[in-house]
Amino acid sequence: MFRLLRRRTNDSDAVFVETWKKAWIAGAEARWSNLPAKNPFAVDPSRAAWNAGHSWAADNPDRRTTDHLRLAHPLRRSTDRMSRAVRAAEIGAIGLGVLAAARWAWRRRGMPRATTQPSPAEPK
Image (cartoon, rainbow, N blue to C red; front, top):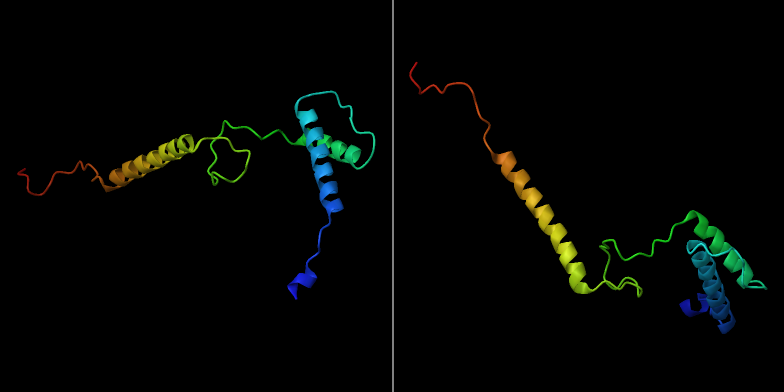
């Protein structure tokens, strides 16, 4: 029954989406690399996709960098190139820092406060 409700995609749909995606990415990369804004495509839909990617990239910076810590699953994207050992070391260092801060806070909380009043057992 559920098979009847699914829309079947044909090859022309997949080709259209792939063509749009490649042209859109080319437009965004052209904006990010500060290349001249000359659209290399002469006909739609590639021309429209390139324009869409180029205008979108004007307001959105290129976030595809590898110099920041990602706490996501290591196989989240196929473009992630960080080695598992480096990732584990970075996450381990963060964990040790959190544990050290928690231990310090726990000990600080449990310390008795210094009193300036004399104790009743001391002679006057």
